[in-house]
Length: 496
Image (cartoon, rainbow, N blue to C red):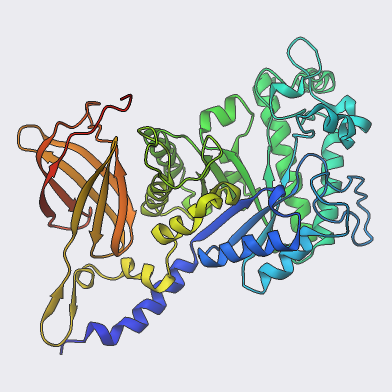
């Protein structure tokens, strides 16, 4: 007996929605977006509109607090002051976020900057707690000079100083105890500033003493030990205080750079189980570099514990919505959506967007949500068995849906209006009768109308000549493709 697809649909959608809920969908919230209840309400509303699951809220920016230190009596004294970013009132962004987010089943992680201790602005540095009271902890360069704040993103305190570890553990312990409803502690700047800094005399002397009584190690191995030991101490302390707390870390996606430049040996952290999750910051503009980094991560065998950080900001500080007149190759929400599709295809644990602040400009976040974070029940259709994707049993035979498109010229780029039969990861190729495939794009599209842009540059780096072509639309798992004849008008030169 044939079982009707429509009769099975509610059960299938329910099962698929549950599976989709397991995907971590996180967004980083910068401190300037959490200075009032209205701002917090804004990012929680956006998280709900885009079906997010996790909020990473930056509550320790540069040795300051966007929460209330010493909120409950405990043995871990926390001397850090209220952040200069917050207004001079009693508003507690972390407390408000926790209460508001948990009403909607959103997880909240306290995002803390670890070894980067001061801002860049001179007036703010002079008032900074670490700079005023623990200036001797600031790391040194190879010549023995204290680092200049402009060398990186502010002054770093040296991971090779034991007192630094003790101090930070107290701060984080107080934070965890003060907010027992926290879902996670998210470590950032858990590294050295670079391999030309980190030569604090205390750390150098400890290194020499270590090598006298142990099998000698290299200087970089020593640096790695300092960072990894702190990660381990933090993990142990966090689990002692709150066994359910998720301990995670934002790390460099380029693993070689992470280890050799920044002493951030994050695969070892996964191997030893001293973090629950890793958030590699895969922000490279070159999609080939992005994919290469993900393939290396995939080979490590920890996809279920890796949440991939995706670049979600405009380099010039504007909106990520594509605009007429944008330079060829400009990064937009379509590039963000493409990266998300790749992450999903490779079955990593989830996606983290950096950042909410970069996406809300010009309504880009809502547009991206339509591309990638639609309603769970609709998105779940992409997980149904293959034969149900392209046809539905209506009792009177099969009703089929086909892909279609239209092309418009917009100054120096083509506007591609795609009609997609089923939400999912699709390819479209431009084929020439003489040269074969001249261009391929792979992106995640919603069912129905989708808008895309192409600058007309082919795989060879040349501009597509005006003429007649075929566009082929297909998915990797399908045994067929849609072939549509099209005409491309010539584009103007970008510099005209």
